[in-house]
Amino acid sequence: MTIARLIEGRTGTIITCDADASVREGVALLAERRIGAMPVMENGSIAGVFSERDVIRQLQALGPAMLDRKLRDVMTSPPVTVEPETSVLAALGLMTRRRIRHLPVMRDGEMIGLVSIGDLVKSRIEHVESEAEALRTYIQTA
Image (cartoon, rainbow, N blue to C red; front, side, top):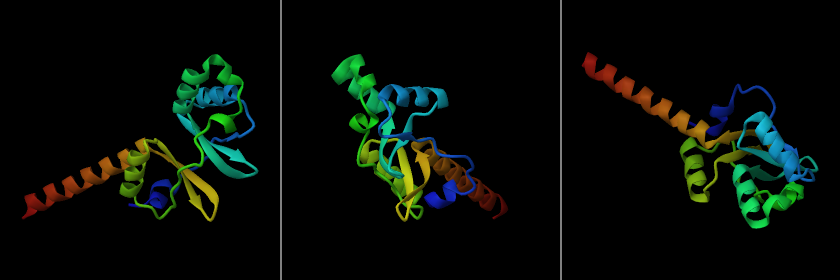
């Protein structure tokens, strides 16, 4: 299965934040939307990804003063991205190697989606369960 198939039919907008927003604003948006990460935009393009992990690292390094910094100063940049044609297994491997949990999906330089490791794991579980059911049915009818 590809990332394109995984995100097809999704409705709604991707929650993003501007690179010039403060970390305080970014944290408030993560909390309000109950999400773990969001793309950070600059001049209409993705500049990085801001996540809970970025908050923790910066809080440890700078203390509460980090809340007044700009997202551009604390986000993970450049963003690690995938294309719609990327397989779910390849995306999972990339996330594991890079130790990240969110991937913006890019087509022709434009962000068309965002997938989390939870999305990919759920897809794999559904695939494995479907295969197991097909094998059970095959064995029962053989």
